[in-house]
Every structure is written in structure tokens, then in C-alpha cells.
Image (tube, rainbow, N blue to C red):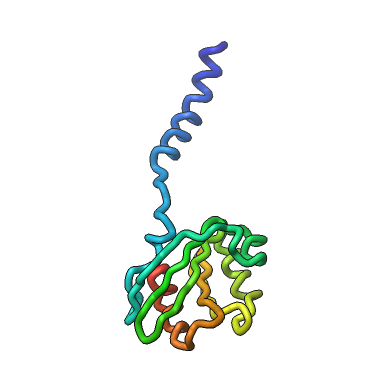
Length: 135
């Protein structure tokens, strides 16, 4: 009897071990932000505490966040928010107030925001980062 139960659970246990063994640790957020994005170069990065994220982002399932400053045509700081699911990033882009909260784009589970006081050139930085995150 015990042997029969063990044999039934063996395939499940093997599958779970395979799944855990094949999973890889995700890259730190600071490494996800590209070092260069078009004519922009990243100068600093830092992880952000989830509590510093806007309430709307936290409500929709924030996984982790980072900030980076880029220089190029101007100097701009962006924040990268990784959401638990891609649909949350899509929902954010629909609800985000671009003028008041800062320009924003999304790519998959990532929601990328330029600080509200960023120069107009920051829109090209956001687009370049978005393109690189799609790759």
C-alpha cells in the first residue's frame, strides 16, 4: 500500500524538482535598465523601496522597482516598475495622468515613468528603454 502511494507521487515530485531546478533567479532591477538607450547613457541606478511607489502602482501589484538617471540630449531620471502581471502595466498606462504624474510607457510587465519635471527630451529616452525591454 505505502509503495503504491509513493509510486503515484513520484512523477509529481520529479516534475516539481525539474521546475525548481530550471528556474533562474531574476536579474536585479538595476541590471534590467539599459546602460545605453539611443543617445542616452545611464549614470546612476538604485533599487526603490515599494513604499515609495505611487499608490496606484502599489494597488495593481508592484513586484519591484528601480530608478536610473541618464544623460544625453538632457539629464532625466526614470523609474522602472515591474508588475506581478503584464495586464497591470497595461492598466497603469490607461489610468496614468501623463501631465501630472510624468510621461510613461510600458513594455510587458514593466511600467516606465519619467519624473514629472523631466525635460521634453525624456520622451525619447522612455521610448528607447521601452524598445530595449521588448528584446
